Amino acid sequence: MEFDEFEYEKKENKNVKKKSERTAIVAFICIVVVAGIYLGKNHIKPIGEKLSASVSVFKKVSKQNENSIEKKDNNKSGKISFETGAKTSFAVVGKNYFYCTKDGIKFLDFNGNQLWNYTYTLNSPLAISEGECFAVAETQGKAVQVYNREGELYSLRTDSAILQMSLNKEGALALILKDSGGYKIQLYNKTGQLLMERMDHDEGVFPLSLDISNDEKILAVSYIDTNEIEVAGKILFFNSNKNDAKNSESGDFFASISKNGTFIPVLKCMDNGNFIAVGDSIIFCLDSSGNELWSVEVNNKIDKVAFGNGTHTIIALGEAIAGRDGVDNGTIVIIDEKGSSKSNISMGRPVTYLSAYKTGIVAGVGREYTSFSYSGNINWNHTATQDVKDIILLSSSNMALYVTNSSCQVMDMKK
Image (cartoon, rainbow, N blue to C red; front, side, top):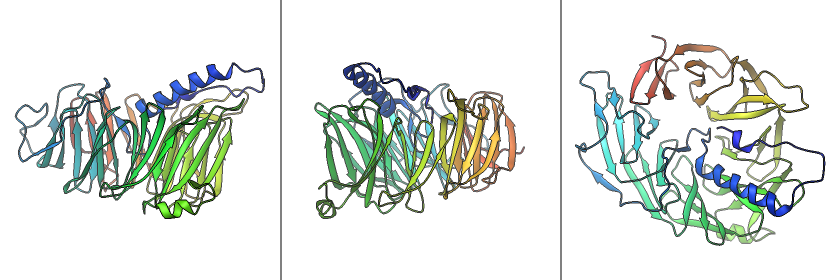
């Protein structure tokens, strides 16, 4: 995830700008955050350029669309080619993968054979994946489709524009919506049933991100509050069960935490049920009751973040924060589930790509890519001959679904 849009200076001088001006600026930042960032959860990828509120009816077809932009190369490599610059998104499930474009979604095996296909027409698809589930919607549209390896799980239509989505591994879906009066938070279970809805119409408070517990009982939502002299990042915890929510003291959220002088654009529920929150220069861990378990503060801006192996948080550091003794720009830090830093790896230059999977981590600087184990050992190095969009590690750290601007195929990265 890139944090460049979120950079700001923490000034001790209290002579700040007028509150209305600050609120307007933060509101703009929030729109950028929820509509245009890459969240390094391995499952948030806006893949379009133009915004549209219209989404066509999703339709399943049984065979390849003759007008599709991609084609299978006439060989046994399983390579799929598509138009250069086509907006695509991929997610691996076992020995198969989801392949999403603005025209539809396909489920293919590693030989390039199509298992199923749904068509639609989107201008700016927002595609997310988690575990064996995949969801796609139009950015600022009102329709969402959720899939697993078998095909469609459910579809739904909202009454407000979709700004951001989050999935859990079972297919439960959480949404940040923008309506005329402010923002709306919704949580759906794995069959598409609405579990909870919250209206956020407080002036100067904006939702940034959210994530769902593995059992879909807890929803955590990150907000930025601009009502005080110093902005504050806040996380609220909600019960999906309405009866449980009534029993909380607030009658709404049952726990909260606040961090002054920062904002929290990334939330991730890990395999152990704890939530990792990532700010501009801080990472902290909360249990499902909202208690802070540990925190790690760094002296550099956090440029990118990824989560892997169900337990680890990986961050790529940028420039040192003014007045602090930071490390080299381009340093990768691997943090385990206890908040311990297991490895600090200097890439020598700013990191331009970061992803993490069960079998390892991939970091890129320009066209130079390196895969690391979670102990920091190098698995392989690779120099690309063209621009690379994604390197998705498979069950072996040496094998990857290799995605460029015009093709994708399974490759042995050591060859």
